[in-house]
Length: 304
Ligand SMILES: C[S@@+](CC[C@H](N)C(=O)[O-])C[C@H]1O[C@@H](n2cnc3c(N)ncnc32)[C@H](O)[C@@H]1O
Image (tube, rainbow, N blue to C red; front, top):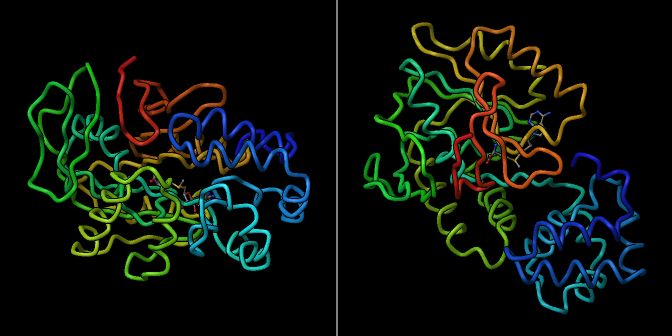
């Protein structure tokens, strides 16, 4: 993540525990405090390459292997460190959150239809089905098709008057998650925090829904390397929309800037839903202009 390389591992766990886990996952918040004070455990983490020391990655790896999230976590993980480290090295944090479609939908609905959707950093591609989910925006009747996935979102502003008409779906990811592979989807499940039972149920329902749909084309590779060729493949007669959420923090600054330049040059509409350093929540932007603050999982949408 942005700026993480400057902190020690102990500081990183304290910061994650206090700013991200606190209030969302009491178990992870407590484990972060314990890890930050355990020099032997920190030494194990410091044996990994710097990007692999992330709290989310450690906790997901332990849960993927069937380990505990209670006070026994460090002892359990230290006793099988080879196995835990191997899972951390082989995987990355690829949380795919269909709830973010509640943030994207109002912008998608207001563009000229039909749409050719391209998601960069698509993970399993669950955000490529915004037209297949049902939406409950606060104070409004449920909106969208009958669906096994309902996304609730607090908002006060203008809402979509229609569902987007999606003509084509495609994506790019360094490591696309194959939703037909139970081991890969088990990893996605391990990334959902332990107390978030509703999110886990929603993820499972979205995976079932996506398995029943024609599979979008998801290109394996770097978004900067593949975006132009994918935009060129989008069908004519549709508005090509390139979008991304929770992806840009994985990129070095020069790569983020290169991507922004490409978006301004190509004949596309560009929706960005990303964290910004030092700010809570995400910023939603259309064609580079911020339009709203959004919940990281689509929990709220506040127009600017
Ligand atoms: C946290 S996940 C978010 C997935 C999805 N956008 C969502 O909102 O649910 C970030 C994804 O970006 C992908 N990613 C990171 N850097 C990338 C790059 N340079 N090119 C393509 N994909 C990348 C990761 O593999 C991962 O699947």
